[in-house]
Length: 625
Image (cartoon, rainbow, N blue to C red; front, side, top):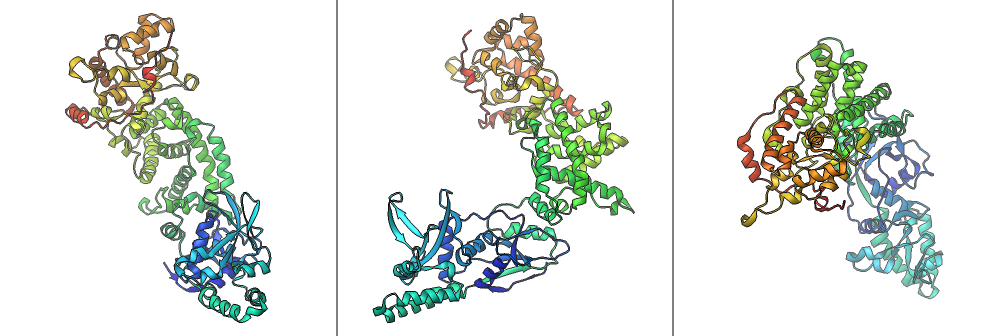
């Protein structure tokens, strides 16, 4: 990667920032340094101390064509097309320009982020004193040049005229690079006291030589990436050196690239995002998710359009470098299909018992699902095709295969699932590799686990009924009934001690396991409270106005053994429900769960107390009839 490493004088950089030869790539965030940090920067330069290297990029490259924007404060002065884009050093360069080379006060903030306008001065006496106290010599004053105290009732420092600046021996840093302005200020300062001209002239010479010269001759080291540098290299370098510490989003990079072609990607995405977020499962959908789906579709199209052996064709991918290579035409061509794919995927999730973003097992799995739908089209709703899509989806969830670095899996699943459902090809790797072990049920305790959310959804998919409302939990009732996942054997009951043994009825690991939880309404959970199951089932019969036989059917829709519940027999309940949930999981994955009962005791011993505590307080509620 070719680059140059010249040194530039600070006044030269300020000139090029002002005339627009140095600008920012459009993806750079707005500057945000506060008053104290700017003062510290100015103090360092006035001492001649290094303040870091700048990183720039030559414009005009064939691979990199970012839209540019002037630095904050230079918008009205820029008269040239940009020659270099500032990749690293925005905060420093903007601070320098606004404080030293602008005719306007600096737009900054205080430590509480209250917006301020400030001019910066050098206190001559303090600047010539101990260099270790140089920061105390940098004085910032409000836009009217007057420092007030007592809530504005009295004036502490008035620098509103040049004469007042000179009497206070406060040199305005805004004119430090304007030699004519500096000379006029010096002449006014020296002549202010006719009787002390020699002494004042000597003081000025010391100030100019020991302090101002550090500013006017300050040299900044710069690394300039040449125009031959490829886009992904520029982005990689930016992330490695950016002193702001904020990762650069691929969406922002494409936004800057497309802006140079007069296409506002941000506006396009916001319109699509608004439409997609009508589905509650997409409240956390990211722009990068959408771009990954578009990249999958675009690279797949390139592969199909290739000639020669398949091994020579470009690969299907949605990695960062491939997203950055998306042309505007490709984005516009595939974005609409990707949006339809996501729209369909939201309906798919609802049919699978997933209604909110918090309950989506893997947000990332929506990317290949949307791309698969965009590729297959309406055929995906055919019964046989749909069943295979369901199997692939649940293998990914219950096999917990979408939790790591998954871009490669995205591409592989798109190719393999499409081939499987349209050409009866071999099983996709996600389906063949997925497995679920019976001991995993003991470690599924919170929504941090995709499989935990998956089992919760599967129960609703299979048509479980609310225990008190006696209606199927579906999209139509989920939000009205405030459905959530709660303990079956209440936490308070499980924690009761067994006589003199001083041990709880139920160990914490099994108490918090997904086996002891199910989807019920807020009202049902309040009716349960912390009561023993043998008591609350009777209470539910009375509240719902049903007999025991009908309530037992409702309990059975949750894969719960009513007899064990009515007998407060946790051991029988847990053993029976564990087996039923394993059958449910096996059905969803299209393969039986692995039995590894020998590790269950080990899992119980290793339990770390993790709990979701969604109904810890409600378990203790005693609701009056």
